[in-house]
Length: 246
Length: 376
Image (cartoon, rainbow over all chains, first blue to last red; front, top):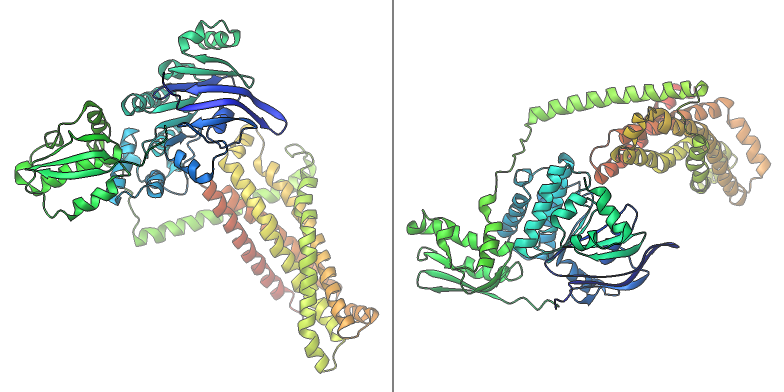
């Protein structure tokens, strides 16, 4: 049996006194696209932030690559982070520098690659996300979709083994959203990346999800494939797919 | 699933073929890059064999392509060949990586055209001209809405005047109180020794009261408010612009100047003169402390001398001056806030520029008032 690449055990997350996530346990397997979905405010982004240790869980633990990152020291945690890439909801590119420099940050900081090679990597990664022409532009000069793609190029700069994406399709038109999905699928299929995506875009889910983790009001209602979800008999889950399907 | 220390990559030449063995990744390339650089010529090579390569990442693909292009450049026999002819014997998995990260997909980047010297001068002229125009329009808008707002209550946020007065006025009290007291104390201490030498102890009252009332009180308060509230006004408005809150207000048919800036304008116009009065009084108190303890003057003697030295006009001109300072701070803060471009960096720049410009404006206004009301 395959070992999970991410293991979330009995995770509870709180903001102050409010419990946002309650006793979540999920295994995420390598080379799969796992979609965390649910309605607005159900705790999807909170779960992602807890997995990435951007927020500390109130209870429970998270293991990535078989190591418990919850109580891990900063140096070891950094080693883990070098093996993952994160695409934030807004892209989170640094606005004061151009796209080339944005993508060069992880390469400069975490590798000793010769400049010529690093330069080519940046250009190749930008070409992969179809932004080869935009190397010299600043984030403020790009459209929303282009910013997301540039952020994806930055997230895959170090060829991560796991790619986390927080609502990659949010605010994008269907065509741009579909092309971003295709790109993510390419990364998963050809580079054998594990992809964890937070979204509630049904079209996107149908296109890319191998597994889904369905959250509702801070609780995990379902974990399995889309087909299994539709026939799960869990009202909130089946309703979600029924209402969202034209 | 703990990652082992990365294996090495090794380069070997067998006949006219360069073999790369092991793992070719961002971790292993720096070591073999030096080996490759040390190699003087590539003209004896006909290709790169990857049959002994276990895995490759994007850095590895670029490295292999770099070798292939060096072979092409240095070997006439290989010059016309494509990468697919020079890079041989790879597994399907490595072939996929070679395909994905191939530099063949690179496109020419858009080139930025740099402006020439005269173009820059021209640009600066138009930039300054536009900035002055915008500044005047904004000032007019703020004055118009401030006057109009006295009669027309719609479009204003309830309670905003009190909230802003607390932020600008009440919250500034401790720092103005402390700094003014210290300034009064220092001026008195510095001059007391000199005055005592001439037996002119009583003139400490003239010195402190005139300096605090005419210059130090209004100036110190204005500089503190420019640094404290001016920066906060600029950053708040800049952030609202960057996050499209100002556009949202416009779309709600609410004038952002009326809604956001005018309450600040009212609050600073009311608070500044009051803060200046407090600054003057506290500064004089610092002077009295030195006069009583160091120069053995009585409080009543100090007070009597101070009343003789000061004219009502001095106080009124200072209060008028402080009102102009206040207007300059709020208008400049709003101006830079509204002109922000970009994200977090733009907000930072707007804030810094607004503080610098506000302090400059305060000093400039002070010079004008000093010239206008020069004691005869």
